[in-house]
Image (tube, rainbow, N blue to C red; front, side, top):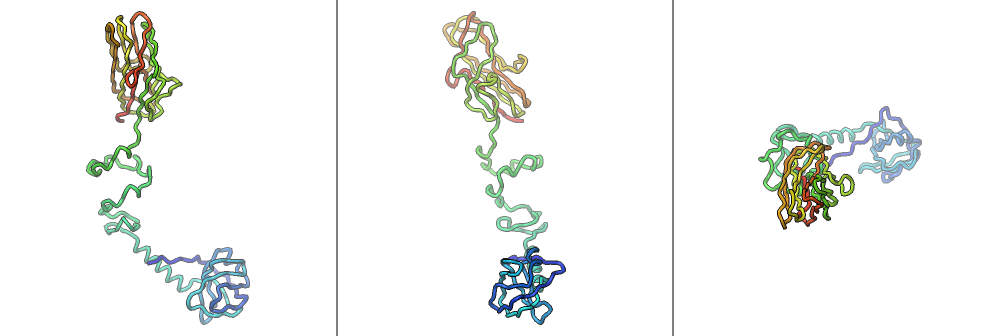
Length: 312
């Protein structure tokens, strides 16, 4: 069924008259004054009100208050000048209202009724639920389903098909890996923060290569895994240390090794820690060789620090 057009009514409709006669084929009518209809944007008029016969015309264009372009039905007849013109509620209006309501009712869905969700529109979801596969990815607007719109525990493993959640559908989680591309001189007996001047990746604005570049800043609260790898130049004296440090010289992981004659000293440490937004951390190294000693810059090895979000 085609939904009929419902035409605007006009309470206490004024009347005017045809200023010129028309025959059954005319599609332009001239009125004594149609300003009341034109200003109210009336597009349905009745000709011959109070006569033995009436004709309903549809206005397609108001050229002026005195000229209306109309479409006429198959029963159009000729009308003399002086024929009354008005906007009254006609049998056509009533029939179209009935058709409109009937069509609307056929599109309604009440609880318990079945409904084809793949092609129709309904006002309610049936109690039996939504048909399998009726909601596809192209029918869901990006970002339409947010965490606040899902009830706790509403999405369970049983409701997710195998392989439907792929890597590219997941939001990028916070993670950063930074390094120093050139050797850093570490003074004897002086704990020193590593200057990280380069980034391998940074998904959450956690590091700057030029401002406070010894720090990793936390912008998303949660549990993180932190890994630090450093290599000291060869020297036979003293000891070598590395720490993952929080503000105020609080260390959450550390390792100390003795120097080995003729060999570089490598240290690798890992920690897991909960951080709040605004927290930060750094990597600190120490050596007691008796003089300056280089922290070596080795591709993909030293010095590298990674911080990766693993959960809330």
